[in-house]
Each structure stands twice: as structure tokens, then as C-alpha cells.
Amino acid sequence: MTGRLFLVVGPSGAGKDTLLAGALAADPRLHWARRVITRPESAGGEPFEGVDQAEFDCRLAQGDFALHWEAHGLRYGVPKAQLTALGEGRVVLVNGSRGAMAQAWAAYPDLRVIVITAPAEVLADRLAARGREGRADILARLSRAELPLPEGLPVIEIVNDDTPAAGVARLLQALRA
Image (tube, rainbow, N blue to C red; front, side, top):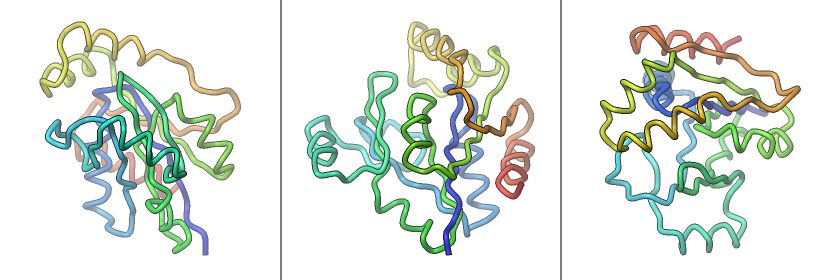
């Protein structure tokens, strides 16, 4: 039995982590792939494995990652072991990046992409509230929110401009579609 792989992308502040955590709480059969990121785990956000650049390079060279990319001065990797749930027939959710979509689509042709977005003013407020970036970093993240998606890749868009519960309901509906 083969599961379904969803790459969940969207601009910083769109609420991807909140919606993914809510979807997992509502349906524990879902598997949220735990990423490896070159930042300290104390930085907060989603559950992830924090490593330094040298460890990331070593794991990349060993072929540990099914997907990897760079964004916002950080490196991200999805360990191959996190995708074994696909073989169990489960739905696997990867908090990804638009920069990794072409690579992911080439590796997983049945990939489904969910784009979570929100109006620019909502994104700015959320980024400021989380307190991880300064004004210049927030503006840089907001400028990336307008980057185009790869041509031909089917996507489902969710506008996360309401309560977290409404956003989670929209995500669960998209996963079941």
C-alpha cells in the first residue's frame, strides 16, 4: 500500500506549523515529517532536529536526505527515514519550501502541494509576534511571499486568514480531497 505525500509550502508567517500541528492533533494517522535544520532547537517553531553546518554536510554527503534546500540563510533536510510511512499507506506531510518543489516533484511524481498563504498585513503581524526576526528580516521574508510557483505543478491553495481552527479545517479538507 502506498501513502500520499504532501509538500506544504507558503510564506513565513502563513501559519504552516500551526495548521500542521492542528491537523496532526485532529488525525493522528497523519505523519508530519520531522526536518533537520541548521539552527538550534531552542529557536522554537515546529518540532525539528537542529544541527550545525558540518553535521548537515556530513548527512547530505551520506545520502540521508530525501529532500534538501536552503532558505533564509538556513539549510533544511527531510531524512529518508521520515518518508517510510508512505510505504505503510499513510499521509505524509512535509513542511517544505517553494525552492524545493521542483526537486520534490521530480523525486515524487505523485506529490501533492498545498500552499498556505495569508494577506501581507497578517503575515507581517505574525512574523513580528513570533519575535525571531528583526524588521529587515521580516521585510525580506515578505518579499519572498510573492515568488511564483513552478509551472504545471498542481497545487491546492489555503488562505489562512481566520482562526487556527478554521485553518486546520481547511487543511484537513484539502488532505481528504
